[in-house]
Length: 70
Image (cartoon, rainbow, N blue to C red):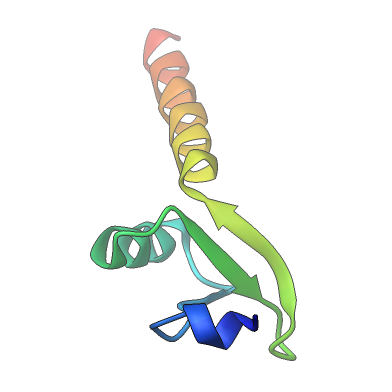
């Protein structure tokens, strides 16, 4: 069986230069938890997961809390 036989929709991707806010919006709007990331040549560079966004946001929030405390 080929992937095209079970895949009903086109694959949603993002590019390396996209902001985390843009990636989060795409994931939210499309209801997806993982998003392939393409490089400048259109080749797969990696996959960003919802957990990656949560971790990044938690670290940023921690930095803000630390800054407020000093």
